[in-house]
Image 1 (tube, rainbow, N blue to C red):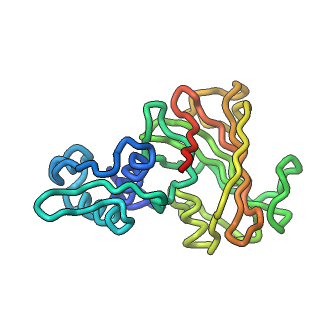
Image 2: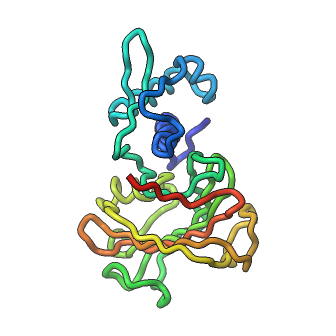
Length: 234
């Protein structure tokens, strides 16, 4: 597994995958992980990379390391995941999400969008989302134009919320999802299997900043043969 420009380092990608498994209950509280060398071989990474992953989980309180015994899962209510608000997973469960930016432009906000932010313009970001390498969804995200004048493709990480926090000083504190039946838009890439105009599940998300205002509006269309929408209540 390699880390490309703008993506999370490999050890964090593995950590986030394990966090999603813990959140979904595929790794349970008190479960012992395999020996480090076996686990590294299974994941296809170096032992040193795995140890950085385990250190990250330990720092988040998700792992207990017992000398001479091994590493044990500790499930917590808040796993501090950068994908905490990413609600799609493979039908079989889990899967690490990645993003391919299709386009970024600054545009006048369309009238059909719910009101948000203070600027008349917004940054329109279109992305293809894969889960465990499978094309699962396409997104059109509108960030209020007041947060920055320009966004470059190379600036973005796999997690937009991480980019917002580290580069723009914007924290997405909560989000409201509206789920209905939509249709694949005409800009959808060929790599996304449902084709233009086909009916498909659609999620409209209204995202609020840490200051309480509406900062972002997004549309997500996902392939129900690949992914499902999951919201687990704690």
